[in-house]
Length: 60
Image 1: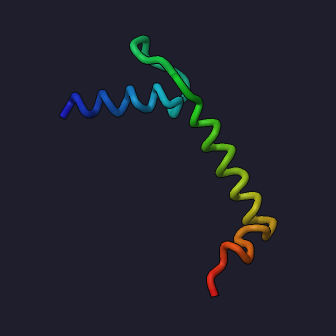
Image 2: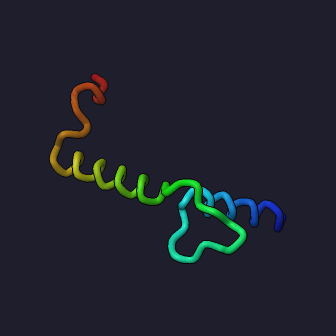
């Protein structure tokens, strides 16, 4: 069980999903936290402005 818990921690660290402290044994290979945060912000802006969902995302 502990092995999986540590694996998840390392996976989050190497994908850049953690904030602040990155353990010495880990290395960030991506910054998905920023990518995800920006994507969600764009989604929220589209919903708030009424541009999403559009006709192409709507089923009749």
